[in-house]
Length: 184
Image (cartoon, rainbow, N blue to C red; front, side):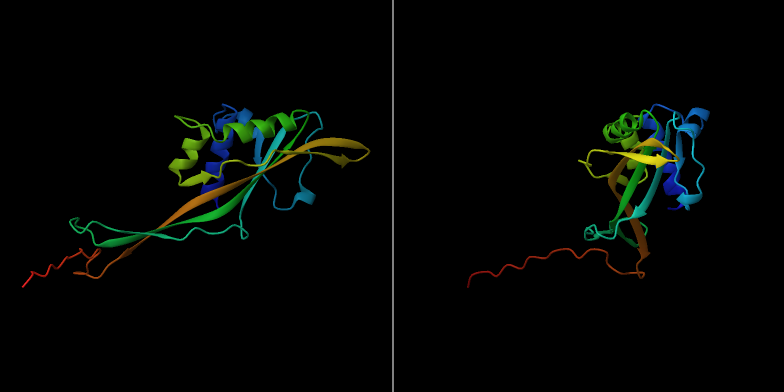
């Protein structure tokens, strides 16, 4: 997951809880997943923590690209191609309110409007796929005790745009011409 993508997801998750991304409460509650989970520090069992990670989803069917030729009347000569790559957002919540937090993310990630998660994601060209499955409640062993954990998986589509310059004088779109034959 690149840094910019991770920052956008972090901002959207903070918006689910009404937290400012720069606030200390947000940085304590929401964290990016560790690359080596077996070496990750474990917070106390009575503390709520949310870990998130995103990875490309190779199993998802990719939508065909959309070709958008520029308007011929514009000064620039370029053609744009848009495609949507499939991603999977994995959210793991630990603590006594793990299931409550996972359900809150599942519900509020689709809230739209100024400052809400969906608008944050949309401005970045990321769209969550509606209807994610319910979070899964697990109990993870920690020493001789059990730790409450809730896992949530959400499918995302990230828009990728590429612009290619056209040869000077090239036509971006061919106008349709209709030829009528006169009756003899």
